[in-house]
Length: 162
Ligand code: UDP
Ligand code: MG
Figure 1 (tube, helix red, strand yellow):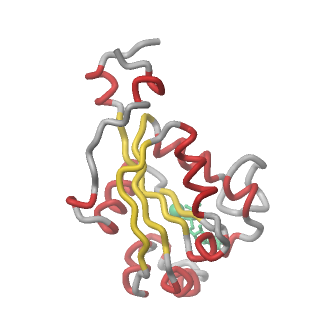
Figure 2 (tube, protein in one colour):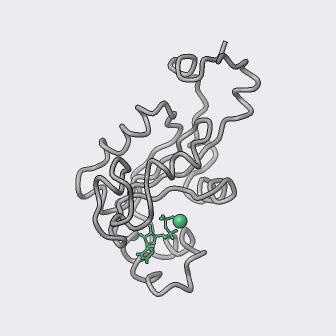
């Protein structure tokens, strides 16, 4: 069904996706990016970062009471982490579907974690879990001028926008 441009623009969302140090070290960057790209989502920001431990603690602040928090923040701070922002209709929710369940032993085959990871402590990728966290995480990892705004030629074919 064809959508008009205004309706299409109002449904656009952005989410924060990061390939963790294990995904980077295992050479999975292009594999993971291609899954988001082929789906039809649009890459609007990307950079390779070595976060400090205190930065990692900010990113995972909602997990600070959990027993794995310290190890998780240490691990993220090994870096490098490939930080990205992806845009598209439903990208926050669907990005989580592409990623799969937190524990790769329970992730469905066909998902990133299901296909490419084995244990929860090395599950290779992070994705925002809702609109509020997406906003907070994008603001934590990126400055406003690092986020691009461009029209991608494939959008009219992905969305059928007239
Ligand atoms: N994690 C872990 N042990 C656990 C649960 C989570 O090491 O028992 C790690 C894992 O890397 C996970 C991250 O903590 O991706 C954040 O946990 P969350 O529950 O937010 O899962 P996610 O949103 O990444 O699926
Ligand atoms: Mg989470």
